[in-house]
Length: 374
Length: 190
Image (tube, rainbow over all chains, first blue to last red):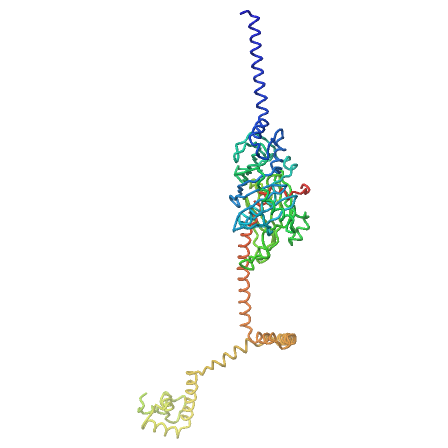
């Protein structure tokens, strides 16, 4: 073989290898879109036919996952240290989202739409016929009802506050409920704060699993889809919800905005603000705490009822993801006992006839510093 | 001295009676005492009586001894009137220290009675005045009861506060589970 021929042969081989490498790179980079297209082609019978997440930045993907636009019906497991595991049925159609729990011959539900929410219940045997629902007071007390009530404040977020305090990373995630996912990691910029991981459905952008962990890595909240269907056979579920939402019992998800003075007047004492809060946290809500006592509820004793009916001021601090809740309430002079704050995930102390309770997801040392700054 | 023993007569020039009489025989003090107490009998008593009739000095001495014995007998068995003594103590307790204080109390009493107009409260005020010690004890008992009741009520209330704390902690998890999205409003940064 002549030398010139060898050179040409080597160049040709190199060119072939380079072309092959470029082809592989292009295929790898475009994987999500290709995978979504392939999956969409395989599920042409469902309502989802195109990938919703292709080309989205992590922050935009997170936003989509927290406010999904597609209709679905799902079985969801929720967990937090207070309620432990609770299973909830969820359905979304025509812009109405319904969360339901079956208990005591009824399906107790909360419906959310257009910034309004309503609690109602339907007899189990009438659920399939779509009969009229009875609106009820917000269900509270039992852990399952409490979990349902927590869903009345739908997953949402303040994007500016979140971006200010957290960084976003995306990568391929493990399958959840048999569906392919993208794993979104939301990491705090400040030490001691909460971190969140979201597994987002590759095809629809729906959050399939959300877990929050504290500064030590302990799980503090879980939302996990066990079964989900994007077929449109669940529209009957939202019929009762629509009727309930049009009733007088429907209330805005966002309560009336109150100033410090208004809350102080409602509570009957001067509500105090701590001088310091952990990095990234700011006061996002100020209101009289609800759900402590029900005027119609018969307590075991007048004292118990008195304590339960005493007004409580609730201050909510957030960094976009983590939450610190600060409760304040007056104690009658004959039951006062002064105490100092001590480190813990829930810090209670009493001073000048006011009882304080500070609960948060952050490092307890930061929580103690916040308590002492009052 | 034996009851039938002869009274002890002593001569004028005897040692013992020189201080009382100097010109005749007299009964000694022991014999006089026995006579006065009725301890003599028979001829001894008769002899002593005969002598006393004729001797003014011994008669006077016998009367003195009788008077002394009577006084001594009174001392041996005192007659205590306990009820009268209790009455005296009570009178001493309720007696006003000064006349002015008594006037003030009387004035207050009249004012209270006038204000109460003879109602049951007026009766109570009168009862308290007449049973000060009992009233004081009742007031102390009422204070102790009130303090105890407040302590028990305070403890019960605090137990309820502790229970409420748990509910509030649960409420925190409800809020954080909902991610406070619906509550987020733009409060000024501190």
